[in-house]
Image 1 (spheres, rainbow, N blue to C red):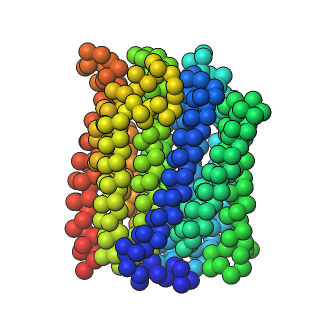
Image 2: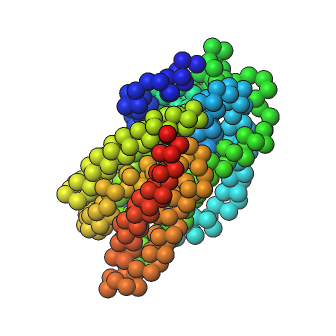
Image 3: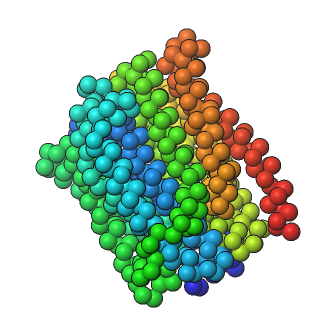
Amino acid sequence: MNKTAELGTAPVHKLLFKYALPAIIAMTATSLYNIVDSIYIGHGCGALALGALTVAKPFMDICAAFGSLVGVGASSLLAIYLGEKDYEKANRVLGNVIVMNIILSAVVMAVGLIWLDPILMAFGASEDTLIYAHEYMEIILYGNILTHIYFGLNSMLRSAGHPRFSMTATIVAVVINVILDPIFIFGLDMGVRGAALATVLSQAVAVIWQFTKFLDKNELIRFHRGIWRLNKHITVRALAIGMSPFLYNIAHCFVVIIINNQLKAFGGDLAIASYGVINRLTFVFAMIVMGLNQGMQPIAGYNYGARHYDRMLRSFYLTCLYATGVMGIAFILGECFPEAMTRIFTHDGELISRTIRPMRIICSTMLIIGFQMVTGNLFTSIGKAGKAIFLSLTRQVIYLIPLALFLPAVFADPLDGVWWSIPVSDTLSAVTAVIVLLASRRKLHMNEK
């Protein structure tokens, strides 16, 4: 109980450091794993396999979207209930997370396995990359239930006052994954199937680790009888709060599908592989910002529930400052060292040369992305589902999809139009976030008083 009570009393900057640092370490470890995974696949299976991984990623993001629908929404709700000191409902949130994740992940797995090839073709797979994408996603889908539970419980651990334990669970998964990758890919000659199997097995070990904490009878939030039956109020409210990250991830999937198909039309499989390389570089820094967001979430949610609005706003301002600094590093690396960054993933000379310019284009607006991400997370953290959903859709649906379809017709080189659609949409979404925040800021300060 003392671990959760400190969210309303300890200095905000110390709390943000305490909660965000483990999340940042965990998210950085995850992003580094994704880079290592791509390096193994790129060097061990070739450029086409790396392109196939880019094609498979939106499908994986759809699976993750359903996990975030439950996990992020429930963890925000848990933090609010803890701030209100309603510990009975807080425990029932935990049980509902497990049940909802099992149901949703089973449905996603079944649908995905039945229509796997048509989905991958729609996502941009060609005849050359389909076999790799199919082999990878088939294993991932069989382990989808473990993935959902893993991400859901990690979110709950942070809101329950155990950010370090959550970090450890992630690091355990990453370390096991990195160890198993070369064994399965090279040692057992399993190719992309080996990479996927390593991912599933590492998450299974992490879930066992998470269960040890929630089975501890000394914990305030733990597994026990009476928490497993789905509660309509908790379920509906958690899903409403989680709808923002869910729609963001779903929209991101459709954006990647559209961009993949546009890139395939105007640049071929290597253009898709270039996009995958750039995504994996920027993903590292986006994951750090997501770690900051995860650190801010229980602080903002708890203090909103406890009506400490000044502390809630302070956590937001600090997170924005740190996020901008992180994305500034991405800006410098992408603009100044694009060739060196690309060589990390591949030794294919043509792929390297075709990635340098797009990387500079996409990284040109990195400095403003952090603010937009944190602003959307603020409204998710305090249960303002409407504003959070709107902000999650602005970049992906309202701006990026139309631009990705329209700009190729405007540019002399259509491929340039696809690349430029990304930074233009980033700029427009950041401006929109400023407008929404300013419109809401007065009300929040009124609440503060």
